[in-house]
Image (cartoon, rainbow, N blue to C red; front, side):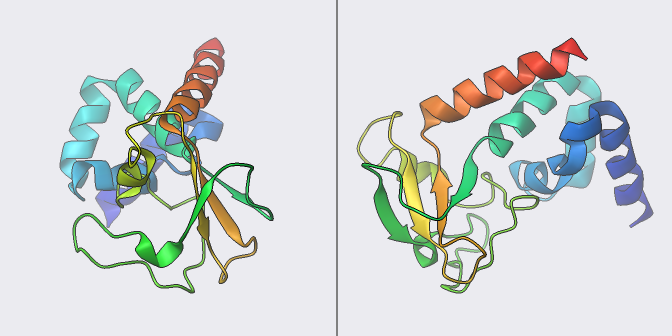
Length: 152
């Protein structure tokens, strides 16, 4: 537990405002291995930061379905490690929801396109829809945020 707190403090010091979610959303990328995540951060902090920004760019909540997006139940989303689907009453917390933990990528490429976003119904959340940006849009948002991060 102490090591996790130290790592979180390290991330927050290094990334300032961007650090709020990095540990929670990146840990699944490393299959829950804190030491591996810490090592990657130590060796390649810029790559780590970009992967974090990419994951942060994945989602936003909405009160309406964006035009042209397919809509799925949040219960169709499956944890990649456990194989367990999210419950229909899942409450979205963008601070901890990890793009890397679930099969979101399979929804993005279901039509062999990197330009299609997807929407999920989230009746248990403050907003009724979770929007997963397209891979192309995630990349654009992450690139923009990375440029901002490097200005600091």
